[in-house]
Length: 314
Image 1 (tube, rainbow, N blue to C red):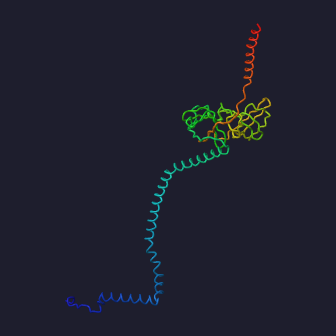
Image 2: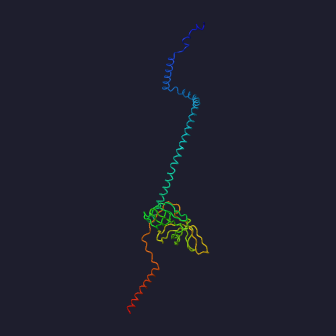
C-alpha cells in the first residue's frame, strides 16, 4: 500500500517548463551574439574551441573525403577513357585528310617550281599529270593526261623542276606517251658545263645514262653536270640533264665509259611540264647529194641542147 500512497514529486524536481528553457536559450544566444558583435569578446574563446575541435573534425571528415577522392578518381578514369576513344576516332577520321593535305601541299610546291622554271627559262609549255607508266617492263615510258585536245605533238620535250625528263613520242586524243631519257632507245645531245665538251647521252634502260664514243682522254670527271646543248633543235640549251657518277678509262680501249644519273625525278614525280616546240629555227642545210643530183640534171639538160645543135648543123 505504500506504493499506492506515494506522493508526486515536488515542482522544483521536474525543472522548468520546455517553453521557458527555449526562451532562455534564445535570449542568451541573442545576448552573446550582440556582445560578440559589439565588443569582439568571444574571438579568443572561438579560436580556442576551433583549435580543440579541428583535429576531431578532420578525423570525422576523413571517410567522406576518401569517398569523394575515390569517386573523383573513378570519374576521371572514365573521362580519360572516353576522351582517349574520341581522340582515336578523330585520328582515324582525320588521318586520310591530313595525308591528302600534305600530298596537295607537296604537289602545289612542285607546280610552283615548274612554273618558276618556265618563267626563268622563258619557255612556253603546259603542266600535265602523269596517269600511269607504260605496260612494257623493258621500257621507260609514262602516259600523261594531255593529248591532241591540248595541242600536244610528238617531239615536245618534258621537264620537271630539276631538269629534263623525256620527250613525247606518241600522241593520242586525250593522252600522250613520254619516253624518258633513261630509256634504252632514247638519246639526248648534252654539254659538260665545266669544260664545254659536247656529246650525246644514251639511256641504258636501268635508270642511268651513258656518254658513248667519248675518247679515253676526254675532259670529263665524276661530279660534272650535263645540260642540253640544243643542237638537236628540240631541247632548249641549258636545261640540266644528268650528273656524271663514274668514268672508266682503259688504255686497251679507245673510248671511255662514262655513266651518269639524271638530275630530274625521272622515276618519282607526279607532274611534268611539256614545253612547246622550238620556233624560228633556221632551216637545215641541204644534203651533199642534192647538188650532185642537180649537177647531173644540168649535164642531162645539156645533152638535148647538143643534140639539137647537131640536128641544126645537119
